[in-house]
Image 1: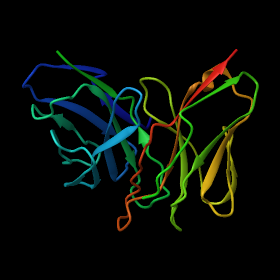
Image 2 (image 1 turned 90 degrees about the vertical axis):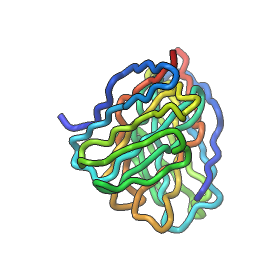
Image 3 (image 1 turned 135 degrees about the vertical axis):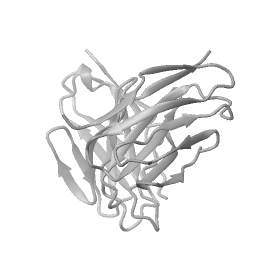
Image 4 (image 1 turned 180 degrees about the vertical axis):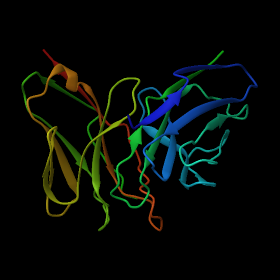
Amino acid sequence: DGGITQSPKYLFRKEGQNVTLSCEQNLNHDAMYWYRQDPGQGLRLIYYSQIVNDFQKGDIAEGYSVSREKKESFPLTVTSAQKNPTAFYLCASSIGRGHEETQYFGPGTRLLVL
Amino acid sequence: LAKTTQPISMDSYEGQEVNITCSHNNIATNDYITWYQQFPSQGPRFIIQGYKTKVTNEVASLFIPADRKSSTLSLPRVSLSDTAVYYCLVGHDRGSTLGRLYFGRGTQLTVWP
């Protein structure tokens, strides 16, 4: 059954702690994305990756880091430098070959600060 | 990048047709128009995409006038389960082959019994 999985569904972070959100896809997509969504708002792009071992900052990359060591995986680390991390985080993937392509989203991870 | 404008919210009743219009005055020649649907605490789901005229699938229709400065998503005979946020997206990252998308606040559609 192809798709995108994110884990965990809920994540709690203590002050000063780094946490990592998992995103895995078995769609054989080249491109992957991380978005942040705050209540009542649209999605804002954090990082994106067009190909393995390459990634680019999005609009709100400060306080976040990513890696793309495998095609199917694109983990996001929320560092202690991110002062307001409470949000809904969404991972997406796409074929990565053109502007008409569709992005497929995972179920999301809700991050809460203790 | 083309910025979109759509109503913040809309209300409808079950069985009615709903039309959500999106303005995108600065759309570029090679930009596509894409609509996504999002339920609470879920990721957005692709609904429909078009470039010009009319596109129809099993879920919705998309009407795009000749000047492409606006588009209308049409949902026939809505049900309670169509209550969701609908996003209109236009544009891509010029100079890149990546289909980067920009999400606004979307339109909250509420369907009443």
